[in-house]
Image (cartoon, rainbow, N blue to C red; front, side, top):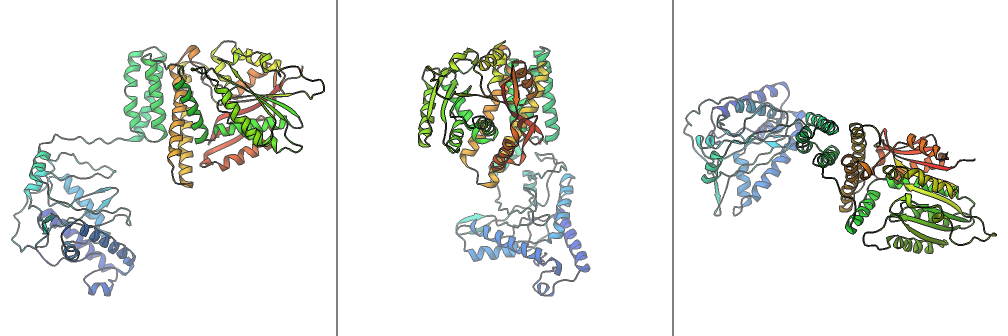
Length: 623
């Protein structure tokens, strides 16, 4: 759409460049109009529009009305009708089909030395003749000055693909005719508003400008040059991974001078990334810095540390399906093992808040023939303030069992490590009546056994203790990763791949939840706290050694070998557990990227093609 501006003096400060751009626009518009038939009704009103462009014209008129409405608001003290008529009189409209070529010509002219300004011809002036034409390109807007002195500009403009705002130089502003101000009701405002869009209306702009005070102009003229930094995020991402691996290799070679130089580059490179890559790189960079400067993380030794660890665990449970999957698959295996039993006993090697057991209690309560007598033994570490936190968990579970009419008994065992447990601690208390049905025992371990690998012989002792009580089933859930082998560089590389996938799954799950429901404060908190939960594991894997490095994850194949040597044989989880786990995962918001797979009788949960955790079931092998 193009509207001819009849008054020769209607545009102030128009130099040779401005006239050249307008001539190009008019010539291009005239050439296009000759090709297609011009709408006769609009031509009678002074608009030359092709009949095929009527839809685009309607959109431009709507944008014009919006711009005129904004201009009216920004002029306090003036009558609305007068201000709107002022905009209608002094705003120049360009054909949208030619605006792209106009912007390209402006860019080429801004990058080239401009010709000297010719003397302004005498022409009659309106009360207000300031007009700024803006074109939206991405998110940037270009003001339309008569000329810009690129030699004194504080920015070195280059033709780069991303949208860049081109600031006008103060010296060029003083060289051209100053903008005229519209006065109304004692207030001064520069009336300049025109809205245009490129690429089918993908971007819009509306600008209202006022001439800067003399003090601001002088300060801008004396300001030091500001460099323009263009960052290629893909190249920076590759450099970031290389810096992490090179730093890990330097640490392995004990070349701490090179490692220190590399670790200082990681925060800058990580800042150029977005999403999961930036976060996981920050945690690995922190862990490398701790190792380089020998500042190892202290174990949780205070009440605040223990409470914070429990809080992180709870948020991780809520934000992603890994713990839910672990609890559900383990409960399903235990429920099938308890079929037809009247007295059952579960030993939980890491009871924490007891979140796993309400679902099992409810499933037992609905069992045909009534629920069995249920006894739970929860194992947990000692509290720094010597309070009985395990007993508090037991009270909550007892109240829940009472509401669903399940005969429930609970006992808490405080142990600094699972290696301190003895077989008699897991046996039934008191003498058992000969007429009573024997108690069926199940042992459950979720993310606990890998910690025993930091102590030589501890895992073998625990597996021997469990073997002595003859459980009907042992459920084991562990991370599907190998962070307990080879050199430091191998361990670092494996953990970098593993936790990058974990952080990707957190990002993907949170985006899926946002699509289904408006983002809530709690949901964002869950994700952040879950990232901290994983970040503490990263720090332990990378920064710690010896007995302090407790996050010694191993793969399902390695656990199969360890349990087989200890006298256990696998129990097939079955297709029923697989189907129900898949159904549960489908109900989880953002679960499109998660995958449940059955692998040699075990179940794994991963993100896309990478398995991340594995559930397996075992029993004592027949003699």
